[in-house]
Length: 157
Image (cartoon, rainbow, N blue to C red; front, side, top):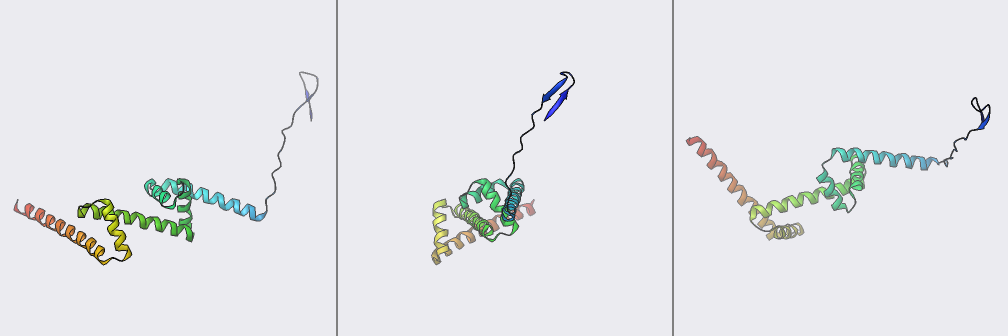
């Protein structure tokens, strides 16, 4: 393409930008690309809203990076059954760890002993189940006694 430059009084060649032709996508490829973009956007939105500790726990339970864990969580929120199973498994593991920690502190035993006790109880060992129940009942009685002592002290004043 040529352009006339008034200052030069003659024609000057002007370079045209080179256009790169994009390959045409099939309908299936286009749909897959759109679906992937939606998943990425959803996982980014979920990552902003969710507790980062939960995301880290899901990541470690599933053995995937944090970004992939956010994507799994987004898919679970969209109804994907495999993602829901993964999130449910991570939630159950998190709750088990909480119960183990509570049993350890209430029973005055180590975390490892409490974990072993809960694993045996989960496998069906009746003595382990009874021991966990005993720890819980003992702690409940102690806290109930402390509550009544506190209320009795406030009534005397």
